[in-house]
Image (tube, rainbow, N blue to C red; front, side, top):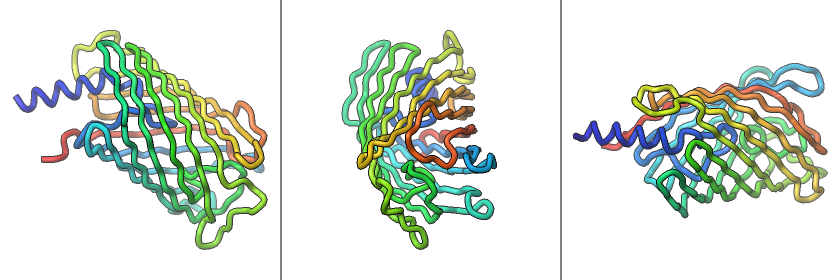
Length: 269
């Protein structure tokens, strides 16, 4: 009976938020309670000054304490400075404070906070505590699911510091910004669920932007994503990020992502 209930919960999780598992941002939904998600996000972005590629890797571990609260730890590695090196890490918490559920839809809101530390060089105006800057971010996220379509949006405040011990943040650059995202996820396969082992295929389109508060410089990127979910637990994302417009200096705005994710359900005995 216990295994049957766990299986049903897997299926419900897959059906209800599969198309909400966005690549660029978290939805208002959390990972299931007492579950651990292990994630490796890899990217290759082309430098604007010499057409070489920056390779980055971000291993992550996410834990769902309960249905409303989750925690995440992330490590940053890249080859920006003399080969692949560990550059820092990040800690994040997200709390879902509002839920409205219906038979074929739901609406949820959550608040999140993140702190990052980084020892890498600072070479751009864009603020990016997920991999390039030390600092913190706090914001709100709202997600609406209607049948097979999910729409999610975030607004956040980001503040950066010096990258200790050797890289001072340039005084002439703005050190705090407003971030915003808008994400769409559509389940395209299967048309009908019959088994936990069915492969899910989701198509996503995400828009990611930032405005530096001191000077108004901004960028907006578009990120199309193809996502596969296997056996209700393993996930593969393939994406391309393209700058749509920008008024700021960015060292490598365009590139590709490969994301691998696996969820361990019911880890608490």
